[in-house]
Structure formats: structure tokens, C-alpha cells
Length: 414
Image (cartoon, rainbow, N blue to C red; front, side, top):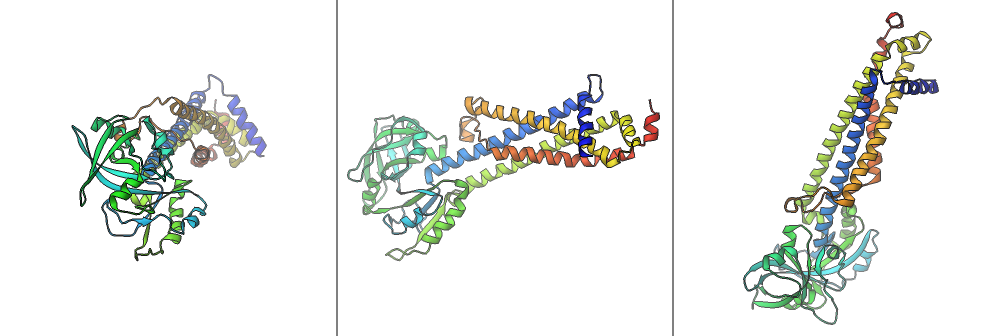
């Protein structure tokens, strides 16, 4: 019976000639489904791409997880921790954690002949992962770090370079408010630009040994340890694993260690990014409703045009259920065609944007110069499956109008 219903449905589609009343409506329905799917694919790719880019930039400045001293000090003058703690090897054994590096931070004031700017000096060691900053480096090079010597070279942002009128090779003085006051003369080795103005305006990278000397710390002391993971979506789970190892350890001076994820460190940014999911859900629901309503309209018009055929099928013994299946199969064929066209168009638009960056953004507001694209194949598949299932479910009720069509009346109608 199912093969018979599919056969009739295919004959209906093939038999729709140019003069048919339903032909333009079927084309409009296919176009509507295709447009809805294309919009959903592009929207998901843009939203996930935007979230991924912003997350990666925030992580680039602060890593995924940080281990610091558990003190109540909220300033940038932190209590140091030893960097040669025995639990480091245990943390590295956790599946999903790829790297651990030490860091130190200290507030300072950069002064040039004409300008002055407060910044955060971030000290890094030879174990620092440069991948993020190399990706965003626009001039110069990174710092050559060594355990045996100290370098005065630094990497600053394009924002700071423009504010302070500095370029690669220039020297500048940085002053530190402490007792007694101190200063260091640094050289610009490289300039980076992440488009994250608030972060770019703040961080200057230098050799960690400068901060250790300024604070009177030993070579094995630092502000904390930064942990990088393979998948940012697993940060919360990995944070729990790290905290289980580190959270109950007491240092020699009686203090404890604090384990903090990047999500907890910058909650406002990640809450804002999570709001984008709501926008995506609203858009998907609206697009599916539009496609579903157009499918319902198209089905009703097809039923109206095939009224005599429905009466004929019933007169030769076809049940209401069987005839409904015929039109549901026809609608399924139409929807699959629309889904295929929409998927191709959506992926093509995403590819064009990803390759050529056609649509630009204002970096001041969006932290990106072009609209980002992140195509996740299971997202595309899930959208198609959901659109198909919801569309067919919405067609079940309007297809019930077939049960009200009487064979006697329709066969007499000319």
C-alpha cells in the first residue's frame, strides 16, 4: 500500500503541467522552504562563528583555567605561588588539558615624551604558548625568552602603539607605583591587534623575570599558572577535575590555591555570548513557522485542485488514511526538494563569506572586522531533520480535510 501511495504522489508531481493551478504555489512553497533553511544555516554559522572568535580572543589573554593564590586581594598586586608544585604532572594527565604555563601581572604606567597610559604588564616565560598572539601579530615579532637571560623586549597592541605613537624598535619607560617607586625601559619588539579594544588597551607582554625582580619574588614564583584545554566547551568539566586536584592543597605559608575558569573570570562577556543562542532559537522558530505555513497553503491548494482525483481514488476503494498519505508523501517530496536547495544555497553563502569576507563589521562594536563563519556539519543535518519533521507534523491536521470530500459529489462535478 505504501508503494502505491508513493507512486500516486510521484505521478501527481510529474503530472503538474504549466497550466496547473497548483504549479506556481508548489514552486513558491519550495522557494519558501529553501529560503528558510538557507537563512537558518547562515544564522547558525554566523552566531557560532561569532561566539567562537570572541571566546578564542578572551582565552588568548587569560587562558581557559587559572590557578592563583586564594587571597581576598582584588588588585593587580597579587600574592605569588610557587611554579614548581608537585601536582602539575597530575593536572597534565587529565584528558583534554594540553598545556600549562606560568605568568605574572603587574600594573604600570607607560610614559613617552608626549603621552601617558596605564597598562597591565603581563610577564611570560619560555613555556608561553604564542599561537594566539602570532595569529594576531601585525608588525614585528614575538619576544625571544630564555631561562638564563632577561630581555627588555615587549609586545604591545596596535591600540597602545597608536595612542602612544610607538612603532617596532622604539623604546619607552614604564613606571611602577610601589615603595620605592621603580621604572623599566622597554623596547617594542612586536605589535598585535585582536580588535578587542578593552583588552588591547590593557595588556603588554614582557619577560616574567622583570616582574619577579620588581616584586622581589624568587625565580620559581609567579602570579599563577595558566591552563589551556583542547575544547572550550569542556572548560566547566575540566575545571572540576583540576579543582579536585588543586583546590584542597595548602601552601607552605598556610594559604590555599584558587582554580578559576575563564567563564567565571569574565562572566559578563560569556553571558552576553549566551544571549546569542536565544536570538538563534527565535530566528529558527520563525523560519520554521514560515516554511510550515507555506507548506500548509500549498497542500490545501493541491488538495483543492485534485478534488476529483480524490473522489476517484475513494470510489475504487482507497481509504481516507491512504489518500492522506498520498498528499503527505507529495508534500514530503516538495519539502525535501526545498531542503536540498536551501542547504546548497546556505552553504554556498557561508563559503563565500568565509573565503572572501564580503560582509564587514565595525570593529569598535563587534570586535571583528568581518562577519565570522563556523560551519558545523551536525548543525546543518539537525536543522534539516527538524525542519522536515516539524513541516510534516504541521501538515497532518490540514490533510484531514480529505476525509470530508465525498466521492459522489466530486465525480459529478465538472
